Image (tube, rainbow, N blue to C red; front, side):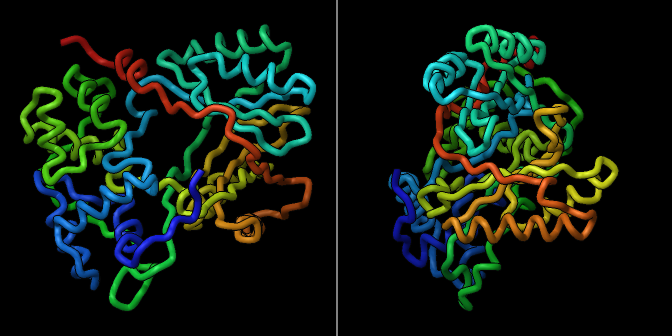
Length: 360
């Protein structure tokens, strides 16, 4: 896997500027480039488009466009941990990965729970069925760790290098979400057939052209105005988390990640959660259930670093923030570093969207 690629000053500025906040407009690269020029970056719409296209082709980006919030589209997903004995590791992993409902699977450093996977389903009742099947096939117990409370999901990865004329990386994050159609959010939880088609068309990104939303509209047979209004409304409603470049964090050198887990007193979680989530290097932050006698931790915070030393430093900063609210002992936390990716197919959005689509 390519890591730590060489980026030009302009490429670094683009990656830092638009990991969200990209405008929803017929020709979005024009206002985006204008905003970058206001920050001291000499770039026009054509150069911005070409830069993003080149970054995408080189694998620096995973995709470009809306980041769909799967949990708001339908169905559910849950994190599951289990033990795979060393002598049966490949056999157990093969059985787990053989289930199409398993979207991601990682080996993590832990004396017992060394396999961690995500089950994504259209019907919540299917979770227990999948876990029962896995237990029957492997003879190993599974530990379901569904999300109880979400404090942060914002995997943004900035690179060192100038964003504005003063070379200020901290200025990263141009927000143009105020541009685009004037829409009113709804409380509708299901999707119309047209909305389902839109979600499935954009879930992997939008075309890298001067008019990406017009291309999306043509692909699903809708008017571009409807696409713009719906994308904007979905962004307001939380069905779309953000719009912009989605970096391949490995390519940017973020090769070290630590899933820190904490046994936080339940009454302190509401205070600690937002504070830990506010740390800029924390990409995911959740409250999850404990499993008595096996898993004492109820709070998860994912951090990433470009070296083992940086990763450890960031974990230490999480601990320091925790200690502002309760007396943390060495037995109260752990850090589970991933050692290998066992499966990564992504969330099967089609099944979940189909199950949550209302009839015409």
